[in-house]
Length: 445
Image (cartoon, rainbow, N blue to C red; front, side, top):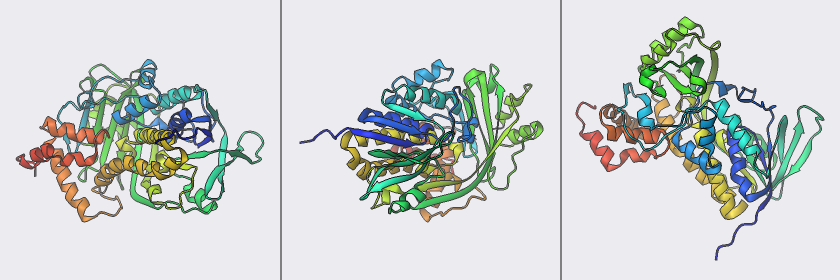
């Protein structure tokens, strides 16, 4: 006979970015009080802030993330659209995907994402979460460490950044670690006698530059986005998304020693020298809306919380605190949303026992597909440093062949894009109906 788990008292969420806000929404259904602690002062408008310097650059909300956010906050996509985002059309039709050195065939995937800036998405999300009756968002508050007793996390030690700097304890039943890719687990867990998770890194050394320009009717065939993935031969790429206010966000990136210039002439040359040189037309006869902005992303990181045998009760990590991937793939916000759904499900079905026993494995499974995609692609590029197995090499050969077939076969194209959009798992590319078309196709070697 099943029983309903006891409702939690207080949940503390350390970090008020996308992962933290979504986690707060997820657990708010099962807790009397949710306190989100964010170290930044939060703007009242969709504006940049110190804690998310990457927010001005191109972001994407994949179909998987859209589904998850709407599950957590019904009507969220509608709210984004009302604020100016675009959410119409199949990703296989409204976008142009240049993958593996060629253009993927137009296809129906049955999935639609949202073209929206990170700034507008986070602002809309924060407004929705702040309106939840059990949620409180405290800004300019830093979490220093966990408190614990007898193998159980009992709260956090926090301090204000804008007032009395004295530390204070906030007691809780559950602490959600949404502190981002830098993470706090490697300090917080040993300080309470627990083991920190093992971490795998892939050194990618990616540099990228972003500019914004006004959209013009007819740009790139009136598509909503263009993705130009890097290849071993051309270790450069671009992502362009038509977002709110009739504005293109164009990000140019390069791996290894490839330069990414900031001046207007250099940006045009860089845009002309990616696989999808059509992105350079977005710079025709129009002035950038601001100076180009640069960002560097040194490595992908994955932390194996699911392998910890002494993970304390009352602690859960989410988002980039678990896995931080090559940002050019656009997986981050969607993975955070899916993990938040899993966290809420664990709390609702079994309380803290399920959070400790089931959630880390479920979060790892969510990450597995994206990690496989990104790892397989990045390890092919010059200058990227990571451990490549014999299986990686064999799978890489198959995927490159599949990418070539996807240029002319809509069935294979749809399978590829569904995996890329995280609505299907990578192993689906080995399904008989896909593999048969890949292996039978002439000229795909």
